[in-house]
Length: 128
Image 1 (cartoon, rainbow, N blue to C red):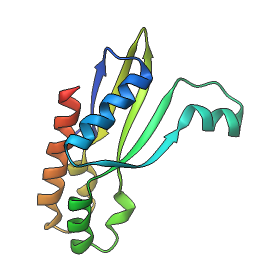
Image 2 (cartoon, one colour):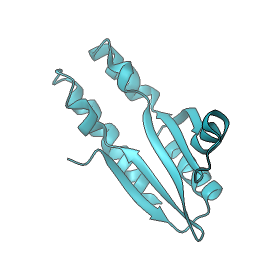
Image 3 (cartoon, helix red, strand yellow):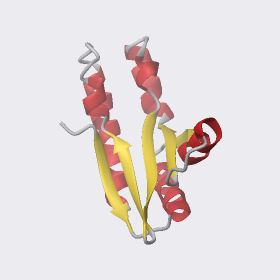
Image 4 (cartoon, rainbow, N blue to C red):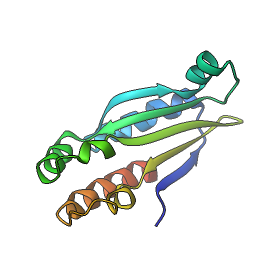
């Protein structure tokens, strides 16, 4: 089972971030965190790296359901979506596959929630 879904889109880096944020919103996700990997690596290690952003996406409805089923599920949240520059006006957008990460949790009740979140994230990637 793949641990992520990815798609290369004909959008510049910033436009891809805006588009994926818009598509996530349509599926009930908000962005809780945003990590600028390029800026962090420059600041901490003084190295050059391509534009790369990690978006911590969360759908509050499904997060609440998961919290009710499993006390420690927060270690697997939020659902990360990455956007990385691929050059020539293209960006790659990838989303975690929650079904893959939830396999490590020994709680079958989470399967329904993970399945729905997976379907929504897959829809986001497919819509780009």
